[in-house]
Length: 389
Image (cartoon, rainbow, N blue to C red):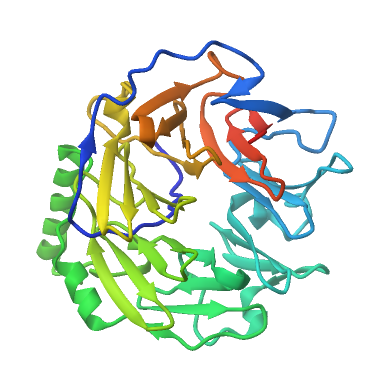
């Protein structure tokens, strides 16, 4: 299964890890085109050739700015949607803005600039209400071309991870660099690598042997690409999740910690802060873990096993959870290419929803987003639907 890399983030301490089973044993829900996971469908934004939104399939970005305008990124481009006027605009059709077709992330800063991180040059751009500019017009104190992840923290402050440091921008001023201690980098280099399967492990070993044979420079033990996700929680703690570990940073105390991934979690592919402040993580192998900061305890769930999901390729056990969301009832909603998976932790109960047993227009769930009215936007392989809470 091939998925675009879209990480969220994590935290972890290797204690109190539990694997729960037999939680997805409830019968499937009755089929209805007006309900999805207990929520009523109130709007459908499906492919419509009569509008500018000619292709809303597989939206990987759903974002609402401070003025209420929606930004929706799909494989065919980046759209804006004015819901009041039912007006769609595709942005990458304008000469010079073709890079927006490869948009990976849309966020807004305190000065109301809309930032876009793209997979092609220019990688970082922003719209100031008048036109598009590259990040270097704001004179950052360090090169940010390959910064990853980029995320919005408290007070709409933007955070950029540069591999060996963090830097923030409040819309007007840049902070100084928060340098990552060498002890954190050394600890990371000694941590073991986890693999989805034996084939992946074998390929990695062959690659390492080739480096030694060619006497080439060894791959850096710590680099930007291995920590592609970030989040600042409501307590102000920053979490950086990656291939082998999670980094926790408290800016006020300038306190850095590195936390080994919990058992069974291959890497951090997604992160979400729940309504109760716990941190949910997802990997690329069908596992989710939740961390209780007060109890310093992890719970880990094997979604593929417990939901009885069949992996098409027996040699490749990868199963990407592309979106994590918790509704106001406490139900977890997980997006995957095989449907919307819900999990009610208190009842140890879960369910898989597809277009065959719910109002989902498509079976591949690529994004889940809560707007300013509390409605739930769900991106699918055949367009977007909006749900009531």
